[in-house]
Image (tube, rainbow, N blue to C red; front, top):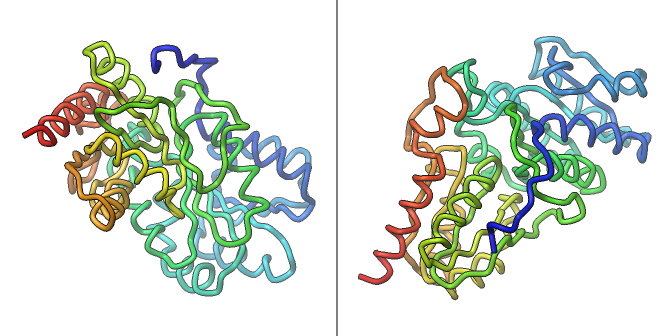
Length: 319
């Protein structure tokens, strides 16, 4: 039962990245950290203290950082570039496309402060299009972990994963409810078995999906909650197996419903098993300044909206 899932603490996912890159660095001498004047926000202090010779401060020059990273791979290094998600993608898309994706460089693009939960920094920093931008690049792996433990595990795992990776995480303190050992790149994580509705979620909204699932279970609705932490390559087998049972679905993401996780799930459904799908995400809009949880409510990304979306999907299925 979803109500039995234990919260073991609360911590921001960016701290999972900071602790993860330190551990990865201890295991692999080829890992190099680069930042664009945001070492504190990216939680790099531990890595820099232990491996100062493997850290490059690029300053406020994100495009240059991506190009330096691409060059480092030629010498066998594994560069982790770090800055806010907005600057990791929108500001440097040309450099990522040409110097990393097209060239198949082994660069790990690590992006914090993604989505609405960046909060008070406002719309200019709350990128809600980055998953779409990155998943459309040929050969790019896109990972959106859900809590501190999973972000740490993903940060360590991508060191041994050959090819460019986009790793997206966030700023706010969030419940910790997974085990590091549960994370496998490209393998969806199921939190419950259900027969009435599938809820697919990524990032911070996985916890919101679990909260919604508890409410739905209390109403007698059997819910299957699945964490799609790897948006690309998508675990299509897990998606098909779930919707074959439930015959309807909800997708949940801290991202525009255009181009994100929802589109990926819908494409799998359209090709294999067309079903009613409801989308929880921002609807073709920018964000605004505000407190993270209040923004999730205003833009329809909170627990109550997931519950309503699930009930609507079930009603459509039964109509």
